[in-house]
Figure 1 (cartoon, helix red, strand yellow):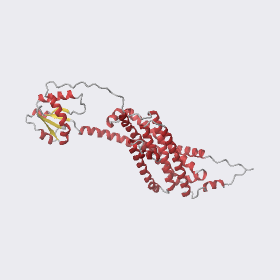
Figure 2 (cartoon, helix red, strand yellow; figure 1 turned 90 degrees about the vertical axis):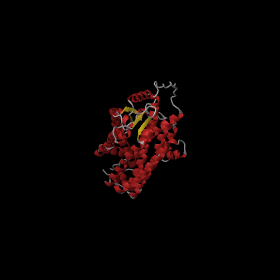
Figure 3 (cartoon, rainbow, N blue to C red; figure 1 turned 45 degrees about the horizontal axis):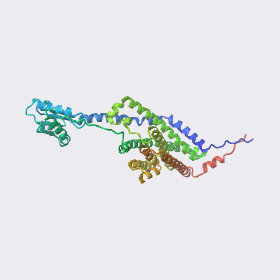
Figure 4 (cartoon, helix red, strand yellow; figure 1 turned 90 degrees about the horizontal axis):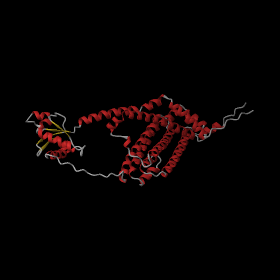
Length: 417
């Protein structure tokens, strides 16, 4: 009695088996834990360095102008500055009387500044009608106008009040709307590029490791190579989403703990980020989809490189041009943000590697949705073409034959009972 051999897995079933195997193997490895922790250290160190640098910069760059005039003129200058401050909050210096000048009738402002005493940007001497500003060329150019304005108002017994200006605000204009959405497009492109480049390398390292252990050849002899590549791609994509979720939660916790301080140091507040043309919910969905497509495209290219490499050193040599190419296509997509509808933007959309970046920027700038459907279909076709090409190269270079693996499986003797 002859036992029938089980039917071979379909391509989708084989890809699912490979994806599940790789996902579990990578997710529960110690290397993945260290991989998750790796980007957090530069962020923490960069945040601390930025905070310390900001404090040092604020201490080093003084906006104080010392007053070395008569006590009456000093008081008049300070009162005039306080009157003007509500109308010119960022244009006026902080006026402070110089204590050394009050105690020394023959106070030498030039010698005081050249002696590097105090922390004044400049020192104002003379009278209200003939003020004299002492400081470096840079500080004189910066404060000469504001100091003259304050002195002019200080000469008045009652400084002239500014007229009440009536206002009529509009919600937004076409020009301001486009210019503000550029910021959202640029940040989204940069985030997409960083995540793709940071995470896509896992595909290449996983394939090289399995080639070294001869595991990939066993898999290629058992199931179609297309399914192996596709399973690995989607497994690493799922692992990448896990990594992004961990980093996102860590970033949310860090922002919740010190969001005010972070905003003060960096000057960046996500709440003030201009809304994209398609709206935030759909933009977030498109961001996830375009990250997946960018990852699959670059991952498929890395798999093709891995199929041609025979050692880790050769992989590094071959992957460097691809990394530089990806950097160039990112610059191409970033350059076309302010050129919607141009031939250069259409070229960036048509080229598969730059298409996710260009289309994500378009989602921030333009409300049309049908273009995204066409772009996603085109990107999916490009992924399939890269996977097919990579699998053929692997069979020709590693398996030495296009169908040798399957022939060996077919020629296996059947089990008899």
